[in-house]
Image (tube, rainbow, N blue to C red; front, top):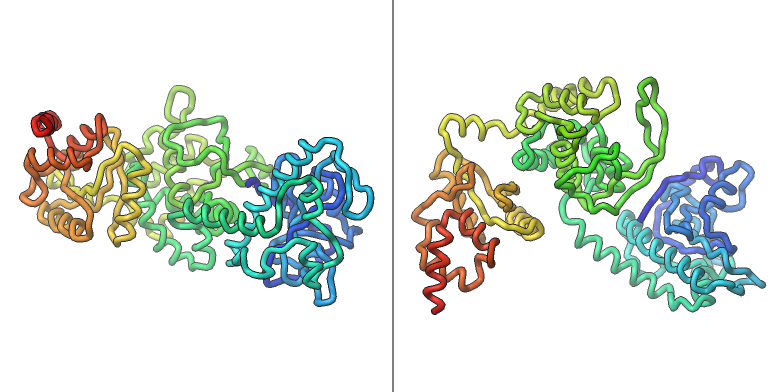
Length: 510
C-alpha cells in the first residue's frame, strides 16, 4: 500500500479541529465517474468547501491512498440518521470510481468498458482492505465485530448515516461479487498475515515511552548489529535517535524506517539489503540544497520491524559504492566514534552542515559507547582467543532467522553472524572456556543443540560437545545435518572432518 499524506488544511472541517474516539471505519465510493483522487483533493481543499470532508481517498488509477484528515479528526463523510451520526465515531474513506461509467439516476449506471471498470474496482477494493487492516491494528479494532467496519449503505440502515447505497451499488452493478461481509473477512485475513510478517520490535511500541526507556529497549539491537556489521553501536544508535526522534517520527511509526532510508538513494545499489524492494511510504521531507532547506516529496522504504531497518541501514553503509570505491571506506571496524561519524558525513550520507556535531553530542549525552562491543575485543586481545557458543549454522538466512527467534523467545541474548557463506547463531562469547561450557549446558537444557567455536569459526572440542564420527554419521543418516554442500559446511563449521563422516555414512549404508 502506498500511503501519501495530503491533509485538507484549508477545509473548514479540518480547521474546526474536532476530535473523535475512533470506534469504527466506514467505506464509501465517490458516486461519480472520477478515478483521480487529486481531483477531489484539489476541489475540497478550500475554505469555501464546507459541505464534506473525509479522512482519505483511494485513487482508482493506481490504488494510492491519500490521507486527507488526521485519523482522529471528526470528518464530514456520512451525514446523519435517526440515531445520530457516524461522523462522531467512524473514520470515512472514499474509493474513487471508474471513468467509463455514467449514472442514469440514483445508484444506477451504465458502463462502456466493463473490463476496465472492474480493474479499477478491484484496485480500490484491495487497497481499502490493506488500509482498513492498518487502521484496525492502530486503533485496536476487531474488523468482524458488529458495527466496526460498515459501508455508507449499512450506516444508513443503522440510523447513523444519510440515505446512500455505496459502495455496494458499484460492486453489484459491475458484477464484482464483493460484499461487506467478504470485505470484513478480507481485512481480518490481512491483519493476521501482517502479524505473521511483523515479528520483531515495532516502532509503534516506542510511541509513548520515555527517551531513556527507548534507549534501554533498543540498545541490544544495535550491539547485536555491531557484532554482525562491525559498525559501532553507539554511532548507529545516535543516528537512530537523531533521524527518527527516538523511533517516534512519522516515518518510523508508519514504516519502521528509522534512518530516513529512501527507496532510491542517489542511484546507489548495494548488496545485503533487507528491504523487500516494494514496500514504501511517501511523505514530504526537508533537505539541504547547499544553501537552504527545501521541501520535497519522496518515497521511503517500509520495513516489517525495526531490526530490518537497522540491518538495511548497516548494509548500505558497508556496501554503497562511489564509483569503484566504497562510499564509506574505513567505517567497518572503526573503534573511534568521532572518526566513524566523520567517515559517514564525508561519504555524503547527510546534507546538514552540523551532522557530525549533532551525532557526537547524542553519543555523549546518553553515554552510548556503553553499547559498543568493546570488552570482548579487549579480552580477546589479551587471551588470543574467544570461546563463542554457537547454536546453529544455516545456508538459508530464513532458517537462521527462525532459530534466532526461538532462542530469543527462550530468554537467550542471541545474535547472528555471517561467515564462510553460513548464517551462524551465537549465544555469547567468553574469554574463559569454562564459562562457554556453562552456557552450552544452559542452551542444551532449554532444548537446543549448541557447541563452542573460536572467533575464526573453528570448533572447540569438549567432553560434552564432541561426538564420535559414528555418532555424527548416524545423525547425518537421520537427516539432522542437511544434504550436499549445506551438510559439508555445517559439519566443517561444527569442527568435524566431513570426509571422515561421509565415509562412515557410506559404509553404514552398504
